Image (cartoon, rainbow, N blue to C red; front, side, top):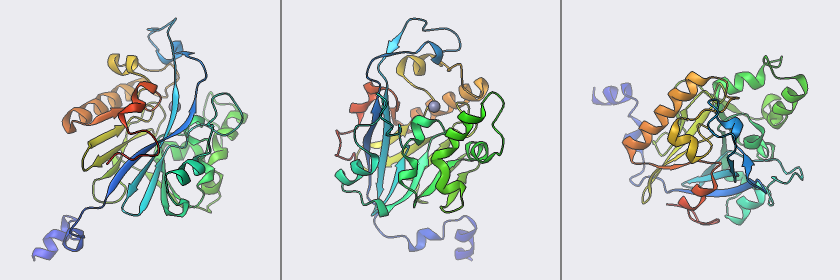
Length: 275
Ligand SMILES: [Zn+2]
């Protein structure tokens, strides 16, 4: 009876789980930088910053869980543009002693090109992406307001998964517990795109870390509920910002705004991992 009760709660795995929780660690990978501060006027649909320029960075992350890994976001493409990463994602992984064949998952906060630029360099990994974003990528026709060429370039990084050659596990509903122990959880935060997500990581020494995706892009917007003019839903964006902030407060989490260079030093300098 007791076994049945535990099974009904989905807790039966706890009976056979190892005595020690998996070793979890998190590192940031540099996936590009704007060479000059850029105008952030269009990041506010209430015209809050007509003249503000800010430096912006492009962040990828790798999380170790025991001897398995998940990469979170893949940054800008290596296309020779000024904001392209100086070192390829796979080479950064090698420098951090992460074997590419141990990267079981690649999680993408959303389908924008500065988060999917090096996605196709991990074609063996299971793709984790918000269901709303996966549906938009899989659509046969470009969404309203997106031209055919832009739509094709948005889809291109997903080729290994669109072809059915690699596994996709779209995140449906409110969250996805990647390893089943609460240590790495994708949180649905729609609004920037239909299936936009953030990532919650629980570290033994450092506590909870919340990676923003693009629920917010820089401190000035985070502090004032600023919403970019190009988000797919203003209402969802505000609800997701509110949720993100409450999770951070309730868990005393370290918030890392992925595009804000002022948050880089919240994690140890590459190739060190936060633990
Ligand atoms: Zn974005």
